[in-house]
Image (tube, rainbow, N blue to C red):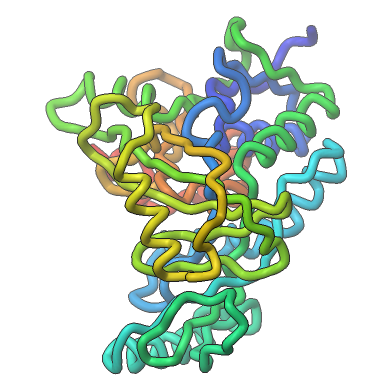
Length: 345
């Protein structure tokens, strides 16, 4: 094997995206992960690429907007190179409007979206149509945004891994780091940082999700009663997720997932009776600041870190790959201040 310019430790969505971005610029890459691509939180089932609300604008929201707008070309190229579909489609999202106050707020956000999102996407308040695939809405109105997209998390990781290997990179279960080293090790990496500090830097938050056998593949995703309902291209609908700080077993599912599924069926009655084909549980890496942690590694000299994609990892991934490749290969630092490791210490 040729000597690697880049070694990425961790084959989750951040690690694979950074490796791919560096490889596209000519670096020789290897990705090392004992579990293989998508073995941790990135191997989940939900895949909702949804924007922050268009108000109280900040660097995190602007970064995410850029990344969501990059996603279509990013994933189309990955699919073209790998021959594996990541299940990406930008089909928008519907949300119920529960009361008059929420309706006024939704309309104000629609005006803000025109300024912040410009012609790239819209956030509209629309009358609910009686076509079944929409959440129950007490006011008769729905929020419809055209920025939200879906991805199939496992297939997206498989597609990225396939693109990397097709272009000559390596995905390895073990190996010796060479060249520039990026730690994208999820919960384990945050626990390492916490162990070196006097307070929690980051931790794992358990999430449970499910797949239902229900074909809504060309329809928008829904968000109702804190639950994401995401149709996938394979004729399943993902339901998720819980957010558990306290847990005994990070990989088991229980009655908390049952409650989430029931919420989804109450919100969207056409899902009643749909068969559960898979239940999933895993730990998502959450930094103390709740923002991604990108930049120079606080513990390992001359190494880098890309971690903390809690709930928004797939939506942030295209831009995370770009800014990390800028930093590592070209010494160009465009990482927002709130994303720097020191923001979580």
